[in-house]
Amino acid sequence: MVAPADEILSRGTTSVGNALVPILEGDVTPPDELDQPHMVPLMRWHDRWWYLVDTFISTNQGQAILLVVVCVVMAFSLGPIVQVAGHNPYGDSVWRVWTYMTDTGTQNHAETHEQKAVAFFLTIIGFVYFAVVVAFVVDSIREKMDQLKHGRTTVVEINHTLLLGWSDKAIPFIQEICHANESEGGGVVVVLADMSNDSMAATCDSQLPTRLGTRVIYRTGNPLLVTDLNMVSAHTARSICILGTDHDSGKSDANLLRVILAINSLPEVKGHVVADTSDIDNEALIQLVGGANLETLVSNDIMGRLIILCSRSPGLAKVYATLLGFSGNEFYFEVWPECVGVPFAQLTHWFRDAIPIGYRDVKGHVHLLPAMGHRMQPGEALLVLAEDNDSYKPKAPDTASPTTTPTSMPTVQTSKADTKSAEKVPTGDLFPPPMKPKTR
Image (cartoon, rainbow, N blue to C red; front, side, top):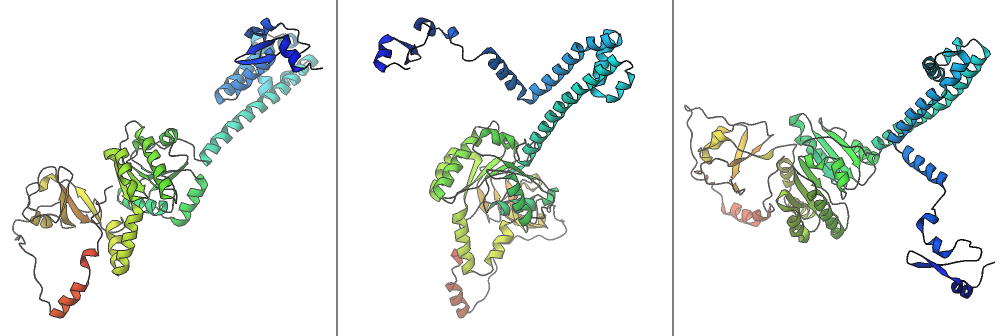
């Protein structure tokens, strides 16, 4: 029977941590002894022993060590039994224990009833032992297969393209990367998203059956975690693209900012980072956090302007698809030492399979349609429009063929009606503000 509370408190209390624990009736341990840690064991010794064994064999390394130790102990401890039954040396008896456990055919060597009984007993022990071994092996194989199925294994790649996040823009992005890698014989695209590995693979297989030699690897994980970024070898990627994964622009950009901070914490990130920003007002903050290695792109704003422009000018969509996609002609930057000192007007004769349209100076500024008399300087990258990055090379023109330098654009005679109709076309609004040329 429990005594009243006043009686309990009046009899005495003992402190456990910062709390006061009342002493109930029937307690035989004095209060001063309860305060000593060694007098109050947390559990019995055998419970503690089984707890340590369970913790040890829960790992693959512990299971392997346990199996080897049990096998050796059984062989040496059961050796004397075989030695007494067969009158064999101890070393031979230990070996006979092992053969009885592993191979039932060795029971034919048993001649007397004592030897047969011992062989039968050891064979039963061998059945149980190897059943446990098979269970551990099957469990390890199943664990490894689950890791492969759920995309939790480490990706060991160099100069690959890394895509963080999954949205409706993922499939077009992978398709363009496949076209870009076609001239190089294919490449590797690694996708890390908080989605099922099978779901991403099924979506890509149904919408993008042909990949032109490019391998796509899927991994399930959280791009906010540094461990998952190391799992996909983000520090060795050639380029990293971060997609917005939320319909709310504020939440999407906040998540984007956290991913960039996680990438900045990685050591020696060699690739450039492209972030798909949802709100143009957050672009400056994201650029400030990402630094010089980050390039932001407000895709929603650009796509909205392109849709309006293409609706006003039929056929303009084909022009953008040809220039901005890797399936047609693209813009390429390349430094050609053999073109140093050549006037820009004569570069058209040096490139038969490309169209020079500008250059990038050593400070990183891009000049479109420069002066025809400008001579290429060391370190300046020529901007051309070509089919692929390996489809053109500079070649000095033949000195016998005349080369002319255009000084002015040709004029075309037009009527007044044509002039009036041309004034109605908003030519200045056909193209959005200049965009950065694509680089690989």
